[in-house]
Image 1 (cartoon, rainbow, N blue to C red):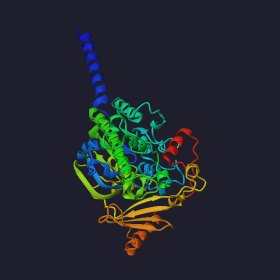
Image 2 (cartoon, rainbow, N blue to C red):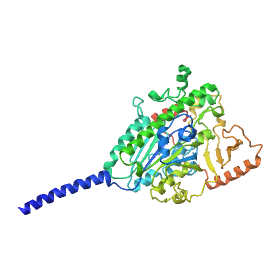
Image 3 (cartoon, one colour):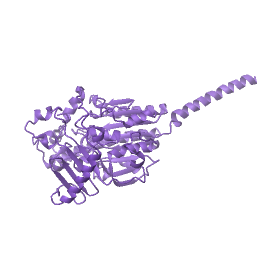
Image 4 (tube, rainbow, N blue to C red):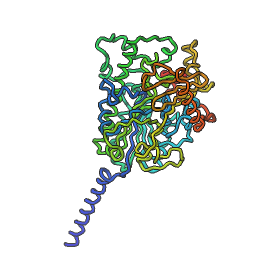
Length: 475
């Protein structure tokens, strides 16, 4: 009897132990390495977030995240459009280094991406992308176990990328593995057509509703840039109100992701980064969109990081920060090195208290190759001279001054302390400052040479090309 009873109790104990082990693995015993969630609010300029001082309550969810983490008040992109800026986020390299430019129109396979690094060490990797520039076709799926192209879905389903991302998060506790998740929300990109109740959230009560609807139909800035679509000061204001509503949509999506992480008890062990690839013009300098713009409206982007283990809550950092700083920061906080020797995570990480402040920042863009598709602009605006925008352009700024250099097309100089709106070009009044910054930029360009050996990608993906043409990107 004692023998049978002993066996019975042994079996019961074994079952209880197995249940306990299973529960521990599923809910409490997952790999302790931090998760990473990198969220890009495509086309979001820094000064339209309420946590950055904006007068409208556009971002209550991001504001809460910022209060629990760090806000970088002077973060800048490396280019004014999607593909090269995302390449900088994925690789920690400038466009000239990654060769993801208008010259190539893809992220070459030779690059080592964050997703590849995480996959190599056993992370689950997943991406959810709203913008067709960030596609498998363009090389951005490198290292991802799952790469969901939300822009392929019909618009009958609102926010398909968010829905899939939330569903994927719900499955992660069962895997017991840490994860790297990238999300691109493209709501703030033209056309500004905010979802549902968001549409009229910030529209002034006296606005002409038909004019609001007309402006919501603008898909890109080419007609305005070519002088074929004049807009009034009131039109710019309405576009700004629609844009603010799109920022609120993005903020709501961020809130849902963070709330899901919180509900899963995973938030404190997750490095959450919210940033943007570039900003947007909303009438400044007589422009809309972000075409060929190196002004603050298109280069100054938001950056919020929450990870209690390495970042104290409530900080606001005023140092100059670039998108190329994000990859080494992620590698550092996750305990990863850099086999390429290009990133130096320990020194360049934003989590490093001994990090040396950047004395200046650089952004760059190169013109498309002459054999690139020239259909859109030539067909729709045959009299428009594209040399204004199809030019090699560089930006360099220090704490106070900013130089925009269109190589072989002159330069502009602004005193950002006295003239934050960049209304007065002082390059003639301050030739020595212009020369000093240009010399510094030339030295940087020698260290980061522009390559020309990577071929132009000639995409055969008609779905993505159709969308990119509507945005005015494929010309």
